[in-house]
Length: 508
Image (tube, rainbow, N blue to C red; front, side):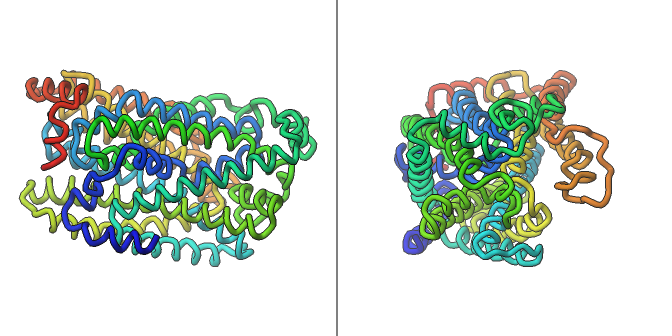
């Protein structure tokens, strides 16, 4: 893959090359790349571990992520691709005032990407710690720092083209590895799902053991927490800028639709396999062994590989998981860099007067800064379940980005003030509730274990912060004194629905 990165780096001088890979990928290629981008460490390490420990409640992550993908595709993906250029802010500022909307969109994009990066870094620390037997915090911190350096170098060299190719390869390896492990687990259990579930119950630590097959282990004491998580998962993907950015790498709207079909098949298949892998880990490894291993709950999939095929399969699955982390981190980083360089630097600070080459230089420098912040944050969240950390990123995306995206695409009376209020308000509500929740302080697995300032009882803020984002977008538009250009609103509607003008939009 290093040769691919080097070849890709030769053609990364223009913004279209660096951000959108020159729009040179076919629908099937982009479908695999989307799957590679979406199937992160949370999907593989976090969900398998959550199912192994919490049974049915852990599988809710798989259900939420899959349903969320369908919501994103049906509501926003192709519409945004037809309307935009490189980033989410291109779409949101199409018919609104450029400066404030781009600034707000860039800030929310950076916030979502940083939250998502924390999860990937935590997964990297857990994975390498398991392989090397590192239990000390300082050793795991060094591992996270090394991953951060690799990611920075990778994105600087390859840009979106190099990132896309490694995501395609990673999707092949990840889904192929998951199929092999799932078939192996089923073969051990006589290809009977009932037998597999029965063996998982025998090793369950829940009281009663059969509880792993029903809802309630994780969310039974507080159903509102489950509702909040569900809202964040189902609505969050449609606001994830690094997933939406993938649709700009194909040349036409037709290819974008083809990539959607491929992505749905691949992602749906993988999330079905997580059920077998999770209960397989519970039956063959055991919840207690998983909890006490270096990396904790995130070590379930590698430990299952070791139980099935010994060190050889463990090495392969760990390499695939590491490639998964590196590819997703690269996609997140290039999205964050594009948001700052294209939206803030080029269009707000330079008023659109900067050259394409100058913009790419700023993007490369931003990559280094984002990488350093991701390393520091990843060290701070060691030990957290990566699927849970991604759920927080989804909550931020659904609160800060999704309301503005939907209003921009479907409400002609939406205004600049509504967009700014929605993005900043939704982001602030999500962040404040996360800081005041048990995630941040007061519980054994919180960031600050020794202090307790948690006054918000739910671990996920979505049930409050998402409605806040929608309400502020409506309120800001209703009370706004500014009248937006209705002609631009009509043009945006035609372009988003028909694709007419989309190719022209992405060429310039």
